[in-house]
Length: 365
Image (cartoon, rainbow, N blue to C red; front, side, top):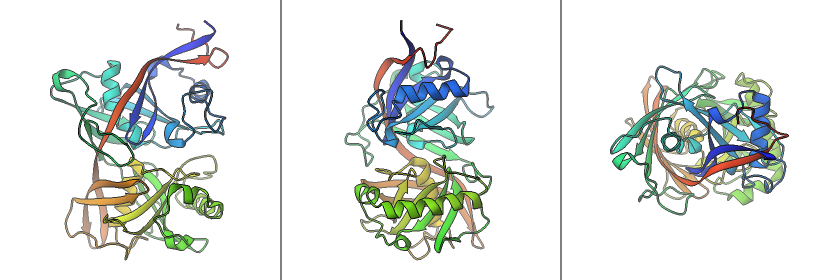
């Protein structure tokens, strides 16, 4: 055989899509692993024509699963963000949308046993150390995907997957507010640097001359905005103690504006060099927490709830995402406890994915 075969599941997780692998089927050497993932996705071409990517950052994501060595967790989830065109792989962030399919994939792969009627699975996001308690519907100990749960950004309904994110404040930088302040001024732009599930730099849309309800296409064509945003993002990364982030997708960037369509607040999320078509699960937790925290750039955009937990309805380009944030607020100090969401996933295909033997010759075959 002139190519190396790698078993995989191809799944939609939330509003993202990509291959899910058992770590035992992949190389352990990081440099070789990067080459394998680049070849698998087809990075290096705008359409990923020589791989299974879809020409967008939400379709060039990879999940690598294994039994966890952590005392708390059942499954380790290692995430890779493969670039569409630049043949780069970023292992710094995690992805909550792809995580939506991790529990189902772990059962399908046979690395975690199913229960009846649901299967609780404790997942450790290896990249950030985040802990996520998932509940997968498994009647008769079988993973099901059909259901009536709808999420904006996915055209059909599916079975619900419950996700509860634990201890995610400061999971990447070690601090809820990595700069120690609710607002920093960077190049004349007020920015909240926050780390909840995903380190982010968050600003007001109006400070960039935007309304906050622009479509993904409108934003992606606004090259002046992206140039200005990237300068602010990179300086925010330094302030957050993350160093030079030119080749990293973190910190991510977000914009806030007053709600327009009946939600709590309008949001736009960047990956960061393109606009997310909907909303990232990890980013949603950070944006919702920013909305609830006094003193941030969200001040004046919403009426904050008097009690917790609180449901924050984030308006995004294709609809709404509900995020339940549990927290305490004492003397103006916001303390994040957990975040809950309901997502869906669906298995699209399974079998072997092939990469050239010049990329990886699996000697274990």
